Image (cartoon, rainbow, N blue to C red; front, side, top):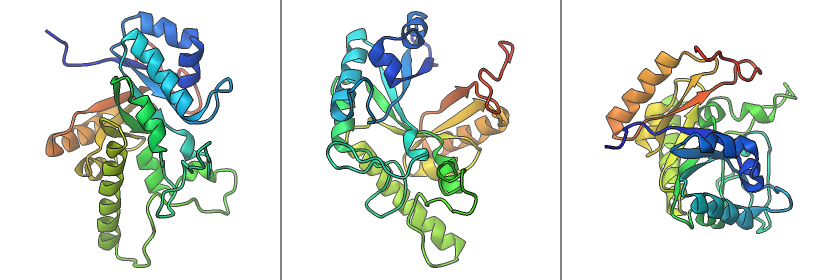
Length: 246
């Protein structure tokens, strides 16, 4: 009887492509899947669609399913790939992950891509992509959704809901079996789940895990989605920031 809980580990696409111990050792411990930090920037001269296809081939050859996690867009304003596609600016002008469809199609080409994850998406929404402008406190970050001129919070919320629903539909349409948003804080779970995103809460780190779990589980139950959790060992720029007992 299969266990209802699947356990994976986090690594980076460079570790996978280079066969580093950061990938091979935890994989040998019997992980159910791999959570792979992925982006279109070069690794040993390999970039874009070729990089995605190689990742799919490595995981496919090992018989291991994987989740592609995207974080690089949270710290840069633009990334133009070899197709001239900007991964960081959406067609509506807002700053959010804007995947090249060919890249996602290549990732899913072997049939073992479990889904796509937007790293710390809640934080990007609530702080206007704070990570991009931490070095300059006089500049505001770019919003994830097109700003409206109205100051009415309900109107803003409705517009964000519609944009988010269309965005989730778009990402799934280009080959992502499912779409999740990793959460720094216990916010926006219900909005994301309502739009079709899987609640994915950070455990440990600097946040209250019990509160994260309660809100994320509530959203998953209300909207009938799976529930994911990222056990994040970072703590105030320290890694590992938690003891084995924790």
